[in-house]
Length: 443
Ligand SMILES: Cc1ncc(COP(=O)(O)O)c(C=O)c1O
Image 1: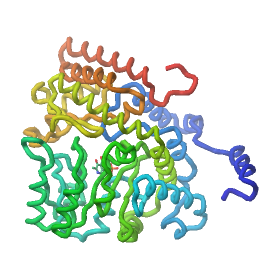
Image 2 (image 1 turned 135 degrees about the vertical axis):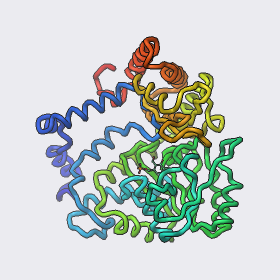
Image 3 (image 1 turned 60 degrees about the horizontal axis):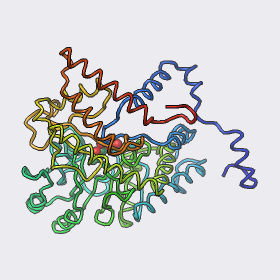
Image 4 (image 1 turned 90 degrees about the vertical axis):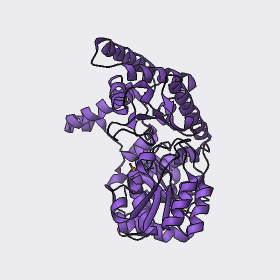
């Protein structure tokens, strides 16, 4: 508690003495970093942010992140810390946990993981032993590095077996998942992906896991925000453990979160701290609490549904420009486009779009003949532009802009001019839907 006195007294005293981020101090002390902060704000506001894993957090989330909670060491969990002075940060963590449990209908929530990868590592540590077999989606088919890549702990310390999508439908091949599970008897099955535009049938995964006696971990890093906004089905009832990020569609601070059944709660908590992490980032945990509260409001449901409508409109717009949506479309916040008919690689499309201030990423498509750093596809996502208030009409416009930029070869005079035209249109559009609009300042 702050100090003794009535609630009104305490609040008044706190407001009189409130100390928050002071940008003037940063400018005076470290002009170089102040310039980076302003430059990045300008970049975020000035272009189109279509990277599917990015979003614009609210000013309230940013305020909690920039608070003095960052100073506090609080190893342990609320009420069971290794340090004194944790009463205030305990409240922040309890609020975050309660809000996560309520929002997702989960028995238990751990809000300490520093990132999605850290959440996944802790889940592995809680459920399996080094050398155990993990069945997860192959990286080139949409899986994540932490799902068994050789360059990641998951591929070095465990024995990964990868499932794929079908060549004809580009949807998860559930028959193959079952066959591989029966053949390899994994201890853990992972579903959830980085570049899979469709909904996942968690029930089928649950049944396969039960059939072979494996745990089921759903990596909901990408789509947990859609679940929060009731725009996608929840994996919580089907999974043993659900790993999340808090910074994608969910629109919170950069970080991770784990939801699980009560029986696994103690194992998950021990796997996060002390097994894989030390002191939690209490400023980030407070910001997660803020974001979880925001995600429970009715506005967030409208937002999440609009995110899906927007990515569908974007995918359809790009399809009409000759870019083939992998799997024929999307049910989520992201779409994957096969560019082979345009004759432009994913790498070149990404670079050309960036020159026109459109940020998206090259991405391998299933069975991609190109190397990952070249890639035949791009991935686009709608979370950030939807936060700015854009809707289907703007998505159609953006599809035209992406196509124009992709076709423009910057080495030619006409291409360079076309990119400048696209950049002008992008700036005008971004000005109409300002990110972090200042109150009272006309856009
Ligand atoms: C499916 C999936 N899991 C985990 C992660 C890791 O999240 P982070 O970058 O916070 O470590 C990502 C990141 O994009 C992801 O897409």
